[in-house]
Image (cartoon, rainbow, N blue to C red; front, side, top):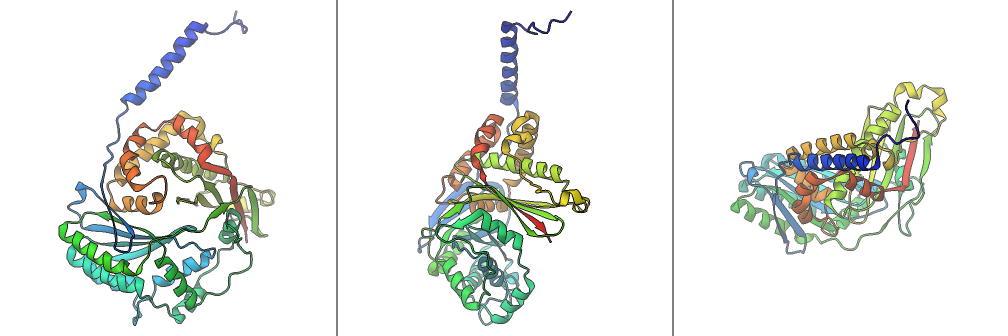
Length: 430
């Protein structure tokens, strides 16, 4: 008869089982094939105006003429509408003595521009040909555009009529972040003028963090790029000390509107990156968190973004509530939350789930790390010259870190990196 008081295994046998299991896991990790992740070459210099320039290239890119050039600014402001409007109008008919947009002018030299911004930085991304005969004229056009931009009232008025203010996004920002001694106001922002945009663009030009180049350039192309950047940056200035951001120290949930719940906006502060392992941790956490949110709310429409900076890092998301849940009267009054603690996620507790997420991430890296655009993102959105995780450090360590990253490292980091006490949510109830 089975005796429930008697151990199933004796202590010596149990010790052997534990040792054998640990050894099997260790051997599995040891024998797992390593991903083939390239190590690009990095060259750095400064423009005559003191702005750092980083150029990443790989031998495999030598046959391609695709080149990425990015300008990263740190012109912090507590007026998000000012940043969005300035960049939006800059992409419009802002060339002097012209009604053409910058992208219309750049078509003839095989180039184009787009922009990106978050609470801490503003980025202008230029795609151009690495052929010297295109680099020089493209940089001349960009010089006129960036240093002599002329905003016009009629396009600004049209822009302001067409742009709908996202009250939930504004409320979420108000809850998550404040500038020290400069709290956000709930009052509608005043209408922006041409003078406001001109002044802010000048502020951007005087707060350049760095310039990022990604792609292959021969000697002639390098000379054309260096010469063009010298002229273009002569009126730009390196970033000075930026304003300090302060995260909320208590979770909260608010509502915009009083109707049925149609969406949930959320955000949480993150500890700034100090290593590639930190970055890997947050990549896996974000993927698992998104899946947990979709499972919890039955949502198939979701947006998730990770933002990294030397002073401020955070994640934000938007989840659309399915129509059947919107129509459930018993649910519409509940304070639904999209939040799950990191330690409750499958990636934290299930080794198979962690391994699957890591394998997917590494598989994606094997493709992405061979493209100039991915390295441009690493150099503009992930690493920063004044942060603990620099581009040089990322390049040096990312391959070994990705191949050797363990569940234990993930568990040790995720609870510290995700500042759960800062978590904020806004329910959208139009």
